[in-house]
Image (cartoon, rainbow, N blue to C red; front, top):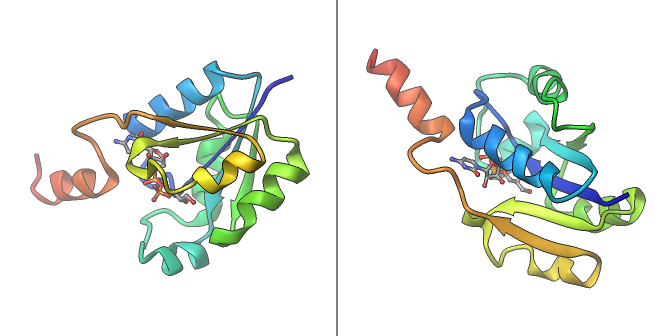
Length: 130
Ligand code: C2G
């Protein structure tokens, strides 16, 4: 069984999130998603609209996702890869190169981001009543 791992905030869930999760699952059999906690988002300099608990349940409801774990810090990835026996680590290519250090532990795949959509853009569109 090929196990896939990815991380993210997944706030205001949109098609870019669904695309990366769908394609991550497509390259394996079991997808684990580390959802950033509110505390870690603060470290990332992000403030999500939805709480961690809501974002966790929303991501758990996605058919491509098999398990959601909390992402509490930058440093947990190696431990998570070992703990869950991960074969492939996947991120959108806005992160290209940033996680190459994980190649010692598993395959690292960067998938193309979905263009013209982001949580920030969604917030702006709503504000402008588009
Ligand atoms: N994503 C995408 N296309 C978009 C927007 C996001 O493919 N239009 C991908 C990102 O590349 C990432 C995932 O969706 O792989 C989640 O994106 P965010 O929720 O913005 O997460 P991020 O802030 O990138 O946090 O340790 C890693 C961090 O937690 C990643």
